[in-house]
Length: 125
Image (cartoon, rainbow, N blue to C red):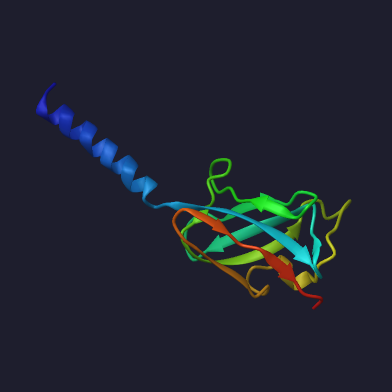
């Protein structure tokens, strides 16, 4: 193999590793409202920069975030969080409207490398 080819291959591998080091942390958790599970919701993590991550809650309120590939989590660093109805016309969620906007919800998470668990209990108001 010629030196230039080796250099290009090495550069490609390092570039791919560098992209992996942009890193997401895996994120799971549970959303409740007044202590009861919030089903049929979308949990959104919005980082300061980069791609947002989201995941649907199941009947017990649990979720797993995805940003680009199933279960890949959320970008590392501080995120603003919102909880939206997955089906607002047929199954609206019973949480105060401000929690649907990451800028107004007051919900935050600091995603770290590796597994993260963020549970949110949304208060009455």
